[in-house]
Length: 182
Image 1: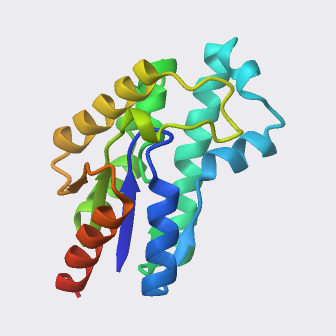
Image 2 (image 1 turned 90 degrees about the horizontal axis):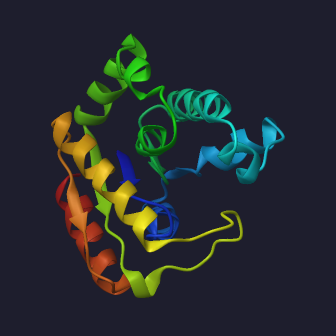
């Protein structure tokens, strides 16, 4: 079972991933973007000032996501998937070149062939600073949300929307889908 939670920042993907990890015993792939940021010894402020550096960063994040999934084989829950490509579209000029790679095409095919994707939608009253991002702006969250929806639709990735603000309702939807997909 491969489960992906996709969506903009501060929408509850990590909370839902932890729930699936605990409830279904799936290995969890945490958000790799923070790991790559630390490895590159960068801050978000440094990234904001250098478009080329952001492009390098986003390409590394995508490659790391693919690597982490390969390590786990087909038994995991991921806090993200291709989400960082929405950020690449928003902040860099590398999206087009990343999407043309064979690695990208294989990755999207892998997600659509047996992956269960949950699209976690934002709610303004659920937004809170996560201690990593310096700024948390509703408009930014909505732009990324729209880009992720576009990518899901563009690449015909089947997904289930989690749009309730209630974590209890989100868990019920996840349980229903995962129990019926076994």
